[in-house]
Length: 75
Image (cartoon, rainbow, N blue to C red; front, side, top):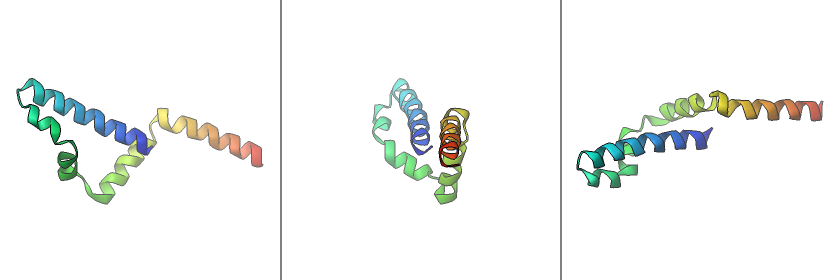
């Protein structure tokens, strides 16, 4: 879940960087972390972002399969 959230954030940031470069402002591409930190939503916002990412079908499905296998193995 956390890695998927980071990938999502980075994907959004790459789109912003590409738009800045297309607009003729390549210097904006170097502010990756500082801009994210300025727009950070606080602890609750980060937790909500992680949970939202974790319940996506592509993320939750493998974990459900693993939980069922563990339950079958230990039951």
